[in-house]
Image (tube, rainbow, N blue to C red):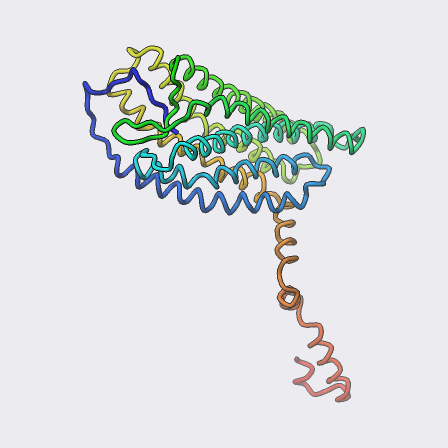
Length: 352
């Protein structure tokens, strides 16, 4: 989806950009993110689906966040083809609206669940070994919160994509094009996305992980792993900010140009619009970062994944792998019986 400004005209200046190089680079980048992101996030959903009945709310958040990132990856080929075709849209009005609704809704959901999980991890760390009031109320609470987060994501994404439609200029494209009050509607959408999808989740993620890092430093139980744990907690919020801040700044600058056309000169505006597609693509890196940081770096996740893989392998293959790792007990027993029948055996038998 692109943002079209009826008032902006760039006819009085011209800058040569390498649009072909940008399209090829972004296509390869989309392809890499799609293959790796889909594989990792499907794995995260599969593993955490097996742990969905756990009392640990973090597992439940990981399941929902993995599901949101998986849906983004499923729709990414549509965005990838739009980029390689220089934003020419040939798949009709329905797919224009539907694909953008799915992507935007799951972007909201991913950020909201990440904020919820960060807060929950800190609260668990702060409570320590304090007993909970009850398991059933805890499960009911997390189910209610997760349902509310999905409803919020769908609501805000519907507001953002309700005016998305195909529009023909020189070529057909998929644009955010309200029929009336374009500036007011566009301004509202940008402010809502900045606050709900970035600012509030970022504040929660940063605050939760900074407080958790302080708690880890003060905990005598994690002295051996303290440095690594603290660095990882800081990495959590740094990655979120790096993925999303360039895009948010770009959108705010575009908004400011719409409200105040004299703010940016033609050359600066050309560079801003050229960079829009690049920074939008960078945001998809969070679909790679989330499974790596929150799942694949976890020992419990890797252990559960290995157990699931071994469980689904043929039993003969599993038995052979175990025997290769721990020796061949049946062969050893046969050798012992042979040595016993030979009355102690010769030196060769002993060496075997």
